[in-house]
Amino acid sequence: MTFGEYLKLQMNNLEIGQTQVMEHCNVSKTSVSKWMNNYVLPNIVAWHSLAVLLSSRSQLPLSQQLLEMSETLPINQ
Image (cartoon, rainbow, N blue to C red; front, side, top):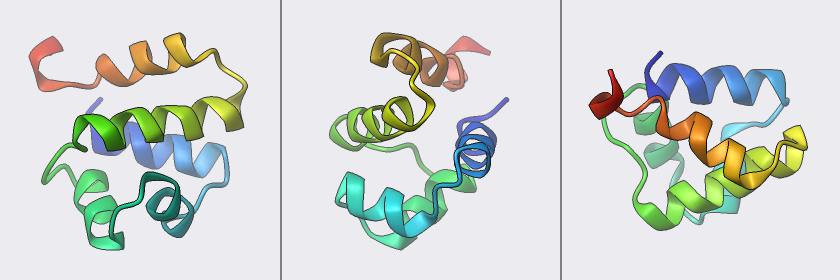
């Protein structure tokens, strides 16, 4: 699964919109769209902010959330 596919799935499952991700990660809606479509990956600050958001919504420990997200990186495929 790519990062974009993972992000879309998590956003859908947790009922999080692009605007919420944008505001929480302090990035543009275009950036979120690029993440979702696998054009780019978030920078390290946005990556951590996104993990915090997803973790807080899913009640998954942050360390587990970060691990799940890291498994979507191309270097792990």
